[in-house]
Length: 312
Image 1 (cartoon, helix red, strand yellow):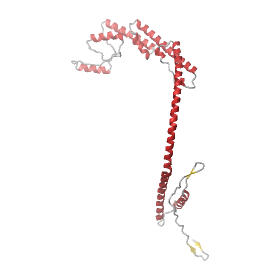
Image 2 (cartoon, one colour; image 1 turned 180 degrees about the vertical axis):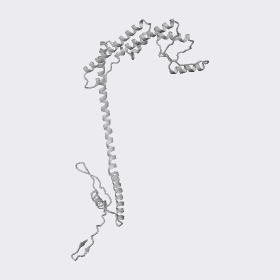
Image 3 (cartoon, one colour; image 1 turned 180 degrees about the horizontal axis):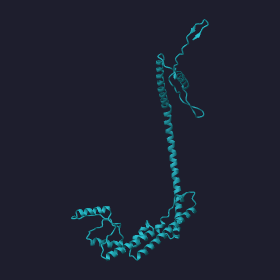
Image 4 (tube, one colour; image 1 turned 90 degrees about the vertical axis):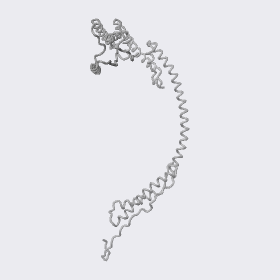
């Protein structure tokens, strides 16, 4: 409490409540500056200062029965402020930004359509020009291919494997480098052709004394080496000799692998009811020279059979 000269006391003056003042945000029409920047006026500063003053005054206030009603009023005014600011922003965009944006988009779209027409027209011309260059280059490259094929005596099935690789058509690719690469392909294909021919010769020689048809084994060169096939022929020779020996001695011949689990199960069912005829689908893999042995086996054992499908 303050004291006067006579010693009496004076009560402190209470701080008045702080209000917002102007509550409505007003955004002015935009203007274009000389440097092509945009200026937007309005009461941003004044309204911001008013709001900040209220925030600073009441953000840490201690509520009492005397001020709680006023603080509730202020809280409602904050809500009104937020709603009003958002409403003004949306309205301003609708009046100034959206129409301008639509107009700019429309005019730019028209310009882009003209640009696109030009790009397409020039692109088509350039593509045609480049295709002409590639067609002319293809003629030259095919001459290199023909020379390489003749040089290395490549048969058609190998000659057709020479590829005109994409890099040959690069503008930075030297013609000599493409020719060298075609030659490299031809050398590799000549090696494959010789390996194949060598394998064919070995197979024919191996089949000759056994009476086997070489073509049966030659087809396997697409996925097996000649060495693997020669070993297979030797094994077939051994199997044939064993079958012939058994046949000559009168021993019963069984063609194919031993019964697997499924066939054993089928056999058990046959024994359970042996009075009925059974039909089984059997896939038999054999070589042409084994056909007579297979047919003989079925006939001698009184087993009827028919060919449902073959691989030729």
